[in-house]
Image 1 (cartoon, one colour):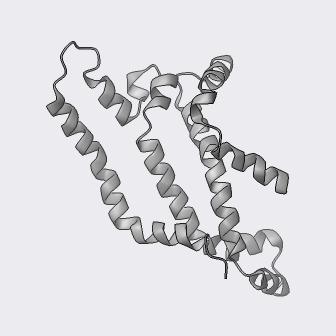
Image 2 (spheres, one colour):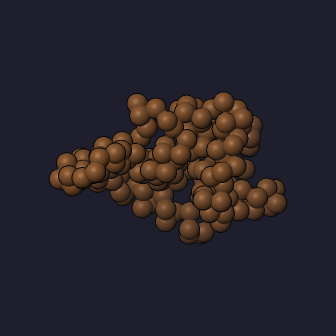
Length: 175
């Protein structure tokens, strides 16, 4: 399992820019360019290294005795995980969800590279293309769109910041 862990964690070290051309060629070969399915697959694959890193650190902080007491109570490994361990991992899960929401919401290059149809693009790439084809750029409407695009994330962060910080810190401490 150690090799598999380091294999997935190595995805955090490799820069995204090194894979743009091979990913594009793969999307063309699979006929997935200009589909939301391709973007979902890319976002899921991009989230794996951080998720594995956070979950492995978080599960190391969960006492082994909890799993042993579940086994004594007659729980199998699968049932013990879903009913006991996974609820304890909710702060880490919430943190991962929040970090991924921020990353997907603010993604600019993915939709510009892999999507052609403007109706499928994310908000940030729509803002870039709002006035990109004109000779003169009116920055007022663009800045207004940027502020409006940021407001949902700010509101989301205000309501979830204590859970997010709790999830980030909890996996770092081993008691």
